[in-house]
Amino acid sequence: QVHVEESGGGLVQAGDSLRLSCAASGGTFSRTTWGWFRQAPGKEREFVAATPWVWTAVNTYYADSVKGRFTISRDNAKNAVYLQMNSLKREDTAVYYCAATYTTVGLTNAAVYQYWGQGTQVTVSS
Image 1: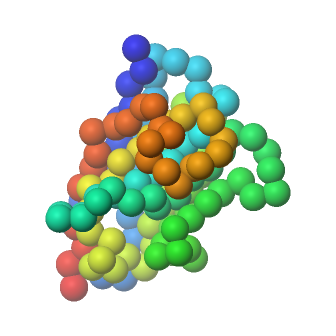
Image 2: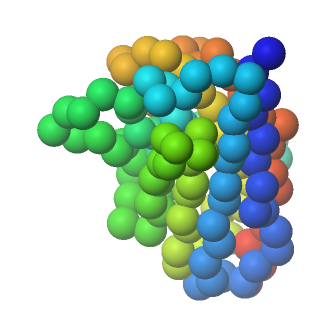
């Protein structure tokens, strides 16, 4: 049974950095597309970043709101994916979810992801 778990959330100040980690077990993940999503109170879950397993001209995708500040990376040997978040803003406050899928299309759509973690809270204070 596939299990996905996030870690690394916390309370930080605006301008700080934070690194989220996501580890998966119970399956084979070398050909897995990884995504990060977030959900703020009272808002819908939104796409943050994704990295497909196939090598293409673009192998990382970002929401416009985080582009240039967040970096997604993966370690296939460890079945892990990371989200480095720099220059954090109050509006980045949310529960962050790691998700996995075997598809390589529609990566900004939460519906294409089959496996989800429980989420980790990130709170950015001013």
